[in-house]
Length: 441
Image 1: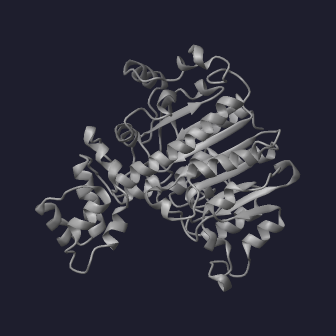
Image 2 (image 1 turned 90 degrees about the vertical axis):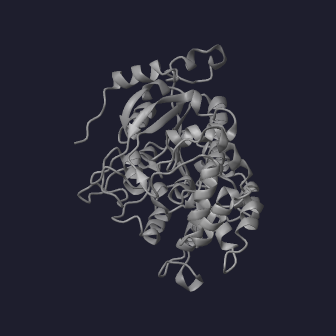
Image 3 (image 1 turned 180 degrees about the vertical axis):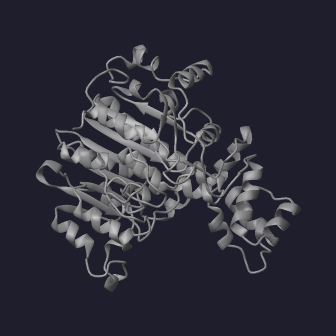
C-alpha cells in the first residue's frame, strides 16, 4: 500500500526542475569554511518543525514576503507522512515518527502501534551527554513537542505529559501551557502536584513574560541550571496579535534556548515548533498562516545565524504534515500583509445582527467588501470561517480541506553533512539521518 518513490528518480526530478538540492550550495565560495554541506562534525542539531507547512505554504509565503525565504537555498528533498493506521497523519503520530523513526497510530505519543514505549532521538541525545530543549508556540505539552520527551496513549493527556516533561531530563522548555503545570487548587489541571515548584527544585529558572526571558541570568547547563518558560495558561497568542501580550516571539524563545544549551561542551539537541501554522490551516485563515510562517522564519534565522558562526550545528527544517490543502494565489497574496487579526478575533467584534461587518473587516484587513461579501458573512453559520473565506478569496488563495492532508512535505537542511538528506524520504528517515550525523549510540 505504501511505497517510496525512487531516491534517484526524485533527485533527478528536483535537479531537472532547477531546485537546489544543496550539493552545489556548499561549493559556493561564500560558504567555504562555514560548515555547510561538508563532512564535518555535528555537535548540535536544531530540529525546526513548522506544523502544517507544505510546498504550497512555501510558495504563498514567498509572494507574501516578496522574496525567497531563508530555507529555500537549502532544499534537500521531500518526504511522506502517513501514519501506522491512516494515509493522513495527525501531529502525534507524525511527531512520534519524526522523533523515533517508528510509525504509530494517530493520537499516540512516544509509543509504537502495539503500545510499546520507544526511545526518541532527544532521549538518545541525552544518553550521549548532550543537553536538550523544547520550544513551541502551543502548550509545551502539545502533540509535537511532547512526542520527543513523553510516552502516552493519547495526545489529549496533557496533564500527564506535563508530569513526564518535568520528570524528564529536558533542560529547556519554552512555550505555553502553564495551567497544565499547576494544581487544581490554583486553577490548573494537576490533581495534586505543583509542577512549576517541582521544576524550580530541580534547578529550573522559571519565567513567564517576554521581559523575564530577555533578562534571564547566565545559566550553565553543565552546572545543572535549566530554564522553564510558560508564557500563557494555554497556547501562546497568534503572531498577528502577540503585540498585545507580554509573550516572547518564537525567535526570542529560540535564541534564549540556544544561549542556554550552547554552554554544554558536549553539544545539544533542540526542537523548535511553529505550532500555529497548523491551526491557521484548520481555520483556513490565510493571513494567520502567513504571519506565523513569518514568525517561524525569524526563528530559523536565529538558528542559522548560530549555525554559521558555530560551524558544528545542523539545522533541519521539516513540517510534520500539510493542513488545509492551501492553493497558491499568485501576486494577490500580498494583500494579507495588511491583515492585523485572525478571523476568530474579527468575528468576536461583530454585533448581534452583524450590521458592522464592513467596518470590522476593513479596520483589520484594509479590504473594501462588496455587497455579496458582506451578505455572505452576515448569513453564514460560522462568521469566522466566512471572514477567512472572503479574505482568502481577495488573496486568490483556495483551500481544499479544514483538516490535514496526505501531501508530501519539503525538507530543508543546513550545516555539516546536510548532503546526507538529499532525496525522497519517509518521515521516519529523518531521526535516523540526524542520529547518523550526530553519531549517537
